[in-house]
Amino acid sequence: MKERGFLLAGPMLYAAIGAGVVILGLTAALKIQSSRLETCRTEFAAFRLETKLIGDAQEKANREREAVDRKLKEKTDADHKTAVARLQRDIKRVRDLHARSSLAPEARPASRSPHLSCFDRAEFTGALRDYEAEIIGLLAEGAENTLSLDAAKAWAQALPTQ
Image (cartoon, rainbow, N blue to C red; front, side, top):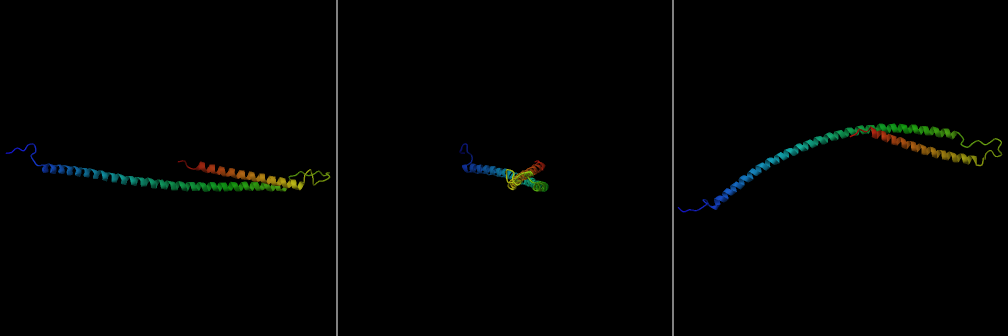
């Protein structure tokens, strides 16, 4: 018999065995990766479901909070409207009170010119009335702004904290 040496089989047999090992390795890798893929898909589906449930719960909480905020705003607006109406009534009462009285002092009865007192009484009284009307208007505007600011502060303080 002829000795062939170290290699007992031909190179084709070693190539076939190598290919078989590679195929078995790839098949095992495919099975492992497929199971990992299924695990990832399952985890992703659970994550999506959990996220959807959290999102739905948050939307419901937001709608409830909006409703509470809207009711609070309506109440604050109504209170503000009542306070402004009360202020306007007071301002009208003050204006009416001052409209009936004379702003210029009465002239002395013994004066040579009772309609003059170092000034024209009608012009002076008119100027004082205009000045008083402007002052009352500024006071009214400031008071309304103060009421608006107070209403906004009250509304903001009444909001539930997060």
